[in-house]
Image (cartoon, rainbow, N blue to C red; front, side, top):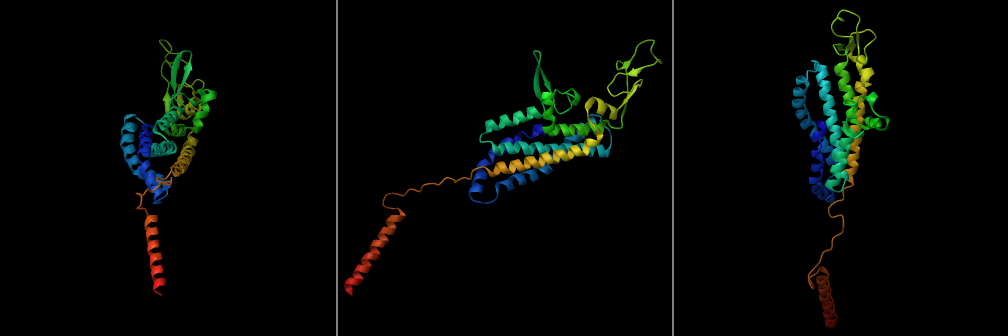
Length: 283
């Protein structure tokens, strides 16, 4: 949801560009001040939307009941929304026309969220944020996208918070062998992360073995996303400063023949010369 909401900021950037150009032409304020003001004005609005959205999603999804876990989830969503908003708004100010801006933001959305590849003849939509395709299973020529993807860092943080400390009991068909006659005999869990002869798997072991995630990366990842947010804000400030001011090209003022300012100056000069001549003659 946070990523989809930010698409509207591209159009907003284009709608306000003409007014911004006039203000820049009149030297009313630095254009980058507008970008910073928009970022600050978004904070309370984003917070209200995300509180309503996350309360529904978090508890309907059956996540762990804990104030710290919920507010961490809310904080990560809030940070991600601001980060992607800054990126898309920077694109809106940096590109000359709306069509190109939508292509760039659509490409960024594809790279961040959905990357399409072909396997045989069937198109398979995969997600390089570490959720649909787990990090150990990512193909080397596309796995580098995750390092440029703010979603990846917060998916790891959310999953690490949710799975750490949990223990999952294995059930058929993940419990082998299973079926009639095997009850009470030696069995083992066939899920990645389970130990030999174990009938359960811990959340931390599954995070490390199957997902390539770690609980120790939670706040490190949040700091990285904050750095991306600051970087996108800087890009947006530079982009908005490059917008040309209205009236930057010199205009030409045309006068009706015989009524321009030079005509009046010439007439005044002739009158002064006649007065000087009369005074000399009288003397």
